[in-house]
Image (cartoon, rainbow, N blue to C red; front, side, top):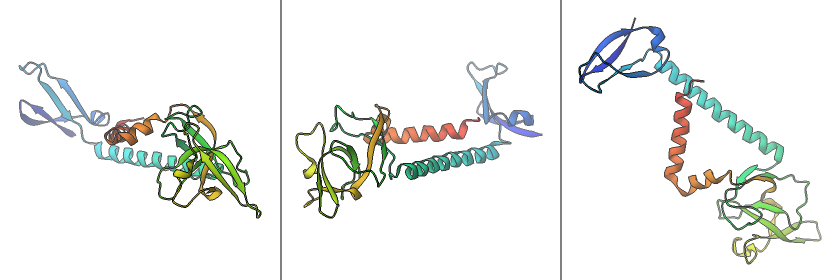
Length: 215
């Protein structure tokens, strides 16, 4: 026989509960009309299967995270890009792309870079990649290619964004090339970056949902 604690009028008593009750939920709160106090609730903490259930949910959460990482690694292999999916964080590419658009990238070595193509690239000293359009291409005699980029909504090219003394980008700077997009679906990512408290709240709610969801 299992026992559950019942809080009643500030005190605690123990009463037997069946195993079927303890396997269905963590706790149950209900109004006890036998008590002569308006609005008084009785809470039974059903604990017989709490720890196994928590262990199972934590394990389930770990499997979800592992699956997501495996899918991400698979996308990296298929697309050839270290970041197959990125979110547009600024309005420098409007009207082609808007803030919050989700971009799908590929970065196959055999694909040449062309003028007018939209690329995502990294600059030394900057943590966040930039999404801009190829403006000019400079090809050396040995076949090496360098290129200049510019945002569609910017008045000047990106030389002011590159590191000091750098006037061109190389293929090694490219994270990927835009192949498709979904409008505004990445706005949640922007909100999480702009408002850290919102990010922590979302992560907490997601973790809580995984832990308490039974299916």
